[in-house]
Amino acid sequence: MAILLTVNGSPHEVDIDPATPLLYVLRDELALNGAKYGCGLGQCGSCTVVVDGEAVLSCMVPVMLLEGREITTVEGLGTIDKPGPLQQAFIEVQAAQCGYCVPGMMMSAHALLRRNARPSDAEIREALATNLCRCGTHMRILAAIRRAGELMQAASLPRPDEGRAG
Amino acid sequence: MWALRVVIVFVAAIVLAVGAFFFLAWRSEIPEDAAAAEATFAPELVAKGAQLAALGNCIACHTVPGKPAFAGGLAVPTPFGTIYSTNITPDRETGIGGWSEEAFQRAMNEGVDRRGSHLYPAFPYDHFTRVSAEDNRALYAFLMTRPAVKAEAPRNDLQFPLTYRPLLAAWKLAFFDRGELEPDSSQSEAWTRGRYLAEGLGHCGACHTPRNALGAEDRDHYFGGGEAEGWQAYAINKDSKAPIPWDEQSLAFYLRNGWHEFHGVSRGPMAEVTGNLSALPDSDIMAIATYVTSIMGDPTPERGQRAAQLREQFEGDYREQTADSQSSPVNASGGSPGEAIYVAACASCHEGQRRQPFGGLNFELSTAVNAPNPQNIVNVVLFGLPPADGEASAVMPAFRHLLSDQQVADVLAYMRERFSEEQPWAGLVELIANTRSGAHRVTIRPSDGIERAPHNVGAEEG
Image (cartoon, rainbow over all chains, first blue to last red; front, side):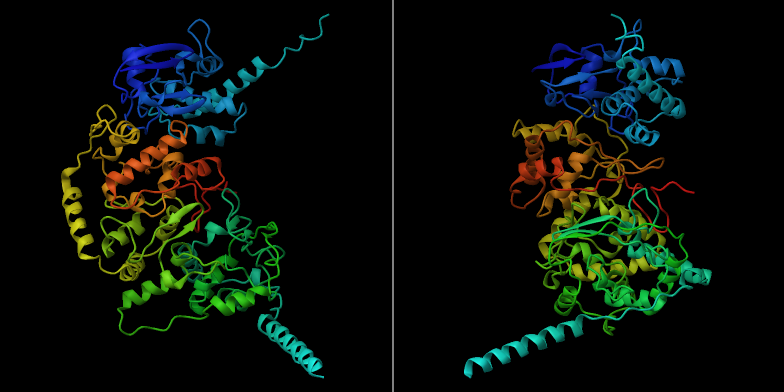
């Protein structure tokens, strides 16, 4: 059955059983391998993507629920040449060891930072409670998310020299 | 003359009635005890009091999550307005620092504060009146040795004329049965102990018994199911909808561990209760189970038969530790939209043969699906079960960002039809919309994010 999905702003038509979890469609059909298969039970968070601004676990979501909705994956946050603020911050802080959990971490953080540009550590911890990291990189991940918040704010604020000219 | 006589009799009757009412309503002030907060108590007494405070779940209402323990100020919504819990730390000005033990005993016994004002029955003195003077002494010792916190509770926001506390004397006259329970010689020691714990400090009925229009427990439907913090407290009498009826062993296990393989995990306000009960010895947990299952009674033969089938189906080693979302254990028959969603999104965990408490409960065993009111299952679908921090716990993802009100209603209607013999639920879409919007307020906290006596889980230490 043909399902129409909008991923990172682009429409995709996939011919697939509508009960298929989004994760498999992303990885197997659309070659978007950022979201990872971890537990397959909605418990580890490595498959997290953002749907209409909210973090969801793509291993749990059948694509039948997603027609007409905006799906964002880690690939939608930036490119290798032009990383987005979250990606930039994770690189700066070196907040990855094996890196398997990081796309999920970034997407949960993306959803958080969209609604709260300056989250407290408690708010970050709460938003990422279902994202597990077995390497123990948590302190750096916290630092990276704080840094990403700063980068995003800096990007949205007018530069000091702006508005003075003319 | 005749008219004058009628007027005199009428006025006299009113004066008498008003006088009698004030006589009934009036309670004397117990003088402030300046030394109370500095008193010392035997460590054993304080330890016993800590256990009793856990049984009483005092911390749950008397603490704002994340704020200092027992300092009060939690909004308790009632049909009559919002009541704010009081500060029961030994702060002299804002807490009970000036309360003598006599004043504390009276509050527990009669629902009257030190100054002589009647307390609202949101403080469940209809249960606490059953507590022995000896246990109250231990509770008092425990509370008076907590750190004093200066915190004034916000003013209650109640409808007029309920702000006028002497009216509570009339409420008490109608509904309050004061004093300890008479012993029942026909019952075992464990049952008697269980009744004392469950009826007194445990105050199970405060949530699990429905309330009448004036907020009193309806004793004709004792343990017949009530409400707490936006959740349904299930019937725990003969009307229990548990597909496999509770027995002493399963209930004791559930109260001890917060889950049972045939019943699922405790959640909502009950997670706090089972967490707090961990302070009690096994013998007390067993006693509560003995008493509560005696109220449930033996299941009807039909219910017993059905339970035997379910036991056979779900007992033992049939469950292997394998489950994932790559394969759904069931296939949709192409029926309702609810079925399609259930099969694709729910079945992989809930029929995935992963053990409790980490796997989803099979809905053949679910009280929620069989309950007269779908509120709890709506709460869990929308908000999930948030994980505990840094420890193994039950967890379920929230589906509120994925499913519309209509889709949740479709799934629940399908589950009700497939897993229950009960009538379909009415008004699902509206109830789901109100729960989602917060018009129906639901408390959602991770199982370790709720306050547990004597530890203040959410608060920063120091």
